[in-house]
Each structure stands twice: as structure tokens, then as C-alpha cells.
Length: 407
Image (tube, rainbow, N blue to C red; front, side):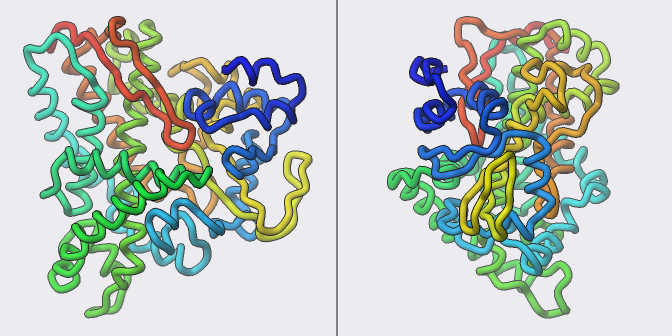
């Protein structure tokens, strides 16, 4: 933690000293002090009340009548347009979720996910054959994520490089709670680029539907011959492009980092991948939640964490902070795939619980399993240590490893 924060005698001084860079570098020590001394605290640097206790985060998620997803000045809406599935409540939100059911309900995901993801993993792992080193984020986890998403969306004509570039630029706009004009411009420009690239695809699918996510977003649950409007579908399609790339790819990277830093657990997992992989995925999602918050706006006056919140105030229930609440998880900063099973908060709570959770979890399961089955002797490359950043979207930026002997 930065020296100025460490020296802050009072929590008010501490909160006033927090910068965006502090949060990007490592938010967890900040959340820890806030959870102990000010579990609901206004942070001027990002214009939000941060909510850091599990029970308070959960309460906000399951009470949309008090904590509305419709946030004035939302950087999500400023980047994607509106409405989006994550920034709208009520009937429109229900309609948008229904449009995704055909591809993302857990039962549906189970019917296709292995056949979708396994060949992508195999091709990427074959490409590492004969190598002694790899950078797993750019060479494996992110490509698995974006190519799997592209296939299920129906845009697998787009390159891995394009999809990864879209994610990195989109997220600059979405995390822009400080209203940085440069970040806003980056996000809006790539959003316009995506619209221009995908609108012809929507036009084709309006007349010739198929089994892709985009087609179902247009047609699922609609009367025959009637489509949802492109203006309704496009902002949520961009949400899926961002979250669907980010959650499984970066969740896998963070999980792998936890394993590499705890070689005893990695050894146990490689001995029984099938038996331990699901609990490993859940621990990775808990330890470093890929997405940090479910941002909300107060719709009715409420007291939360000892703070009276007024209508119109913006709050950020931090699922990442909730996942390290010691009242819920013992030794919460420790990565431990053998911890007692307790539901984590990584995909949020309430009506806005992530619609793609089954897809993300399954993709993580497959990507990690296939990697460890092929390269069971992975170890960190200490000459290029991992750098992990982000508070709204957190993951290793690099994960350089020695591959060891392949199987």
C-alpha cells in the first residue's frame, strides 16, 4: 500500500487519500481497512460509495427496489449505449435475460460447452508443443476465452487479435468512474467500431436466424416474424463481448496464478484434476473476482453499514471485497482450493446475478483442466514475475511460466 495511505491516521483521511492508481495497483488492502472501519464509505476519487462487507453487498443485490441498476452518468451506458442488461431493471431487464436463455442457461451450456471449448484448447496447446516457456494470458487463457465466446455468439469470423483489442479498449470506458475524458473517448470510439462491424451481422440474422447467441437475442421468445430491435440488442451484445471475454479468461489466469504461488495445491490438483477442478475454479473466482462490483443508485432512502444513503447517490457493492470478508471466509487473503465450501460472490446477487455464470465456470474448468493435463509440471518463470492490476477488472497482465515436460 502507498505510504500516504499507510500513514493516514483516521479513516476519513484514508478515504480522502485513495487514488484510482491505488485501486488499480491492489484494492484488497484498501477494502480490508474500509471493511473494518467504514464498510460503506464515499471515495471521492471514483465518485462512489464503496460497500465492502459480504452481507451488505448481498443485501444491495437482492433489493433492486432500493438499489437500482439504472445509474445516472453510468460509464457503462456512456460506453455501450442503453439500455444494457446490467444497467436496467424491471420488464426490460427480464426481456434481455430471456433473450439469452437459449444459450446460457446451465442445462443448455452443459449440452455444448465441451465440444465447443475442447478443440480450441487442444489447438492452442498443440501450438506450445516443443516450447519450454509460455506467457499464458496472451497465448492461452485470453485466446481460449475470446474464441469460445466468438463461436457461441456467431462471430467466429473475427480474429483473436480483434476480440482481445476490443476488450482492452472497451474496459477503459466501462471503468471510468473518475470521468477521465481520455478513457471515455477510447471506450466510445471502440463501441462505435463494434457497432459498425456487427450491425450487418444483425441484419443478416434478422432474416436468416440460426443457433447463435446473437440470433437468439433477436428472436428468442418473440412472435414469429418479429425481432427485437437492434437498438435494444446491441448495447447488451457489447456487455457480453466484454464480460464474456473477461470473466472466464481472466478468472482462469487468476486461478492459475493462485496455483503457481501454492505449489503444494497445484501438485494435488494435477494428481486429481477431475476430482478437484470445480472447487479450484470456485476458489479462483473468490480469491480474485474477475469483475469487482455491481454498481447501483439509491432509489429509496436506506441505512447501510451505519451510513444513511439518499436517493440518487451512487454506490458500488464490491463483490471482490465481499469475497474476502473474514466473517464469511477464513483466512480470506489466502488461496486455498481445500477451504470449506461457501458460495462466493463473484457473479453477484439477486436479479442481476450474471446470466453467463455457467458458461464462464465451464470454460474455466475446461481451459484449466486441459492445460494441466498437457503440462502437469508448470512453474512460474521468476525472471518475468506476474503483474496483477485492476479493481473493476482484475487479473494478471502476464503469466510467464516454465512448461516442463508435456504429456
